[in-house]
Image (cartoon, rainbow, N blue to C red; front, side, top):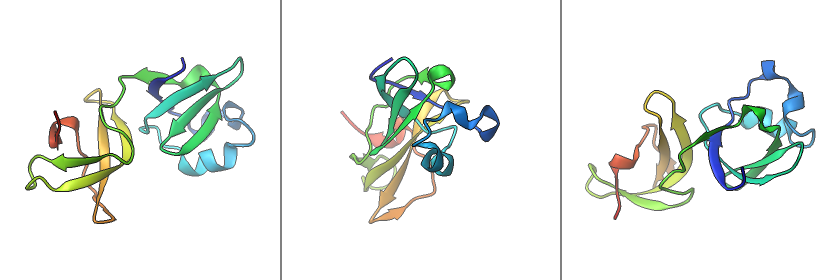
Length: 124
């Protein structure tokens, strides 16, 4: 499972035993069933998921593998429909209906509220 991408749709009803005891508090605060995590490590009990710079150890039974995103956290890209405005990718999320990643971005250090998809960015 190492180096794969996926979602981890955990809710409190699943139980805190799904999360490593040292990671429970921060994971509860930051959990979001749409976040896309990179699986960077696996052992017999837990997998290690990375979201941007944060890592979490969780049990693998809730991990749902999805296609890897084209763009990365912290990557600068240009918007196609806004005069090639340069933005910074801050979040990578999964759109369940469209079955593809979407991105949240910052412009001039301010988060934009709109969701962006790969087609919204200029790339080669």
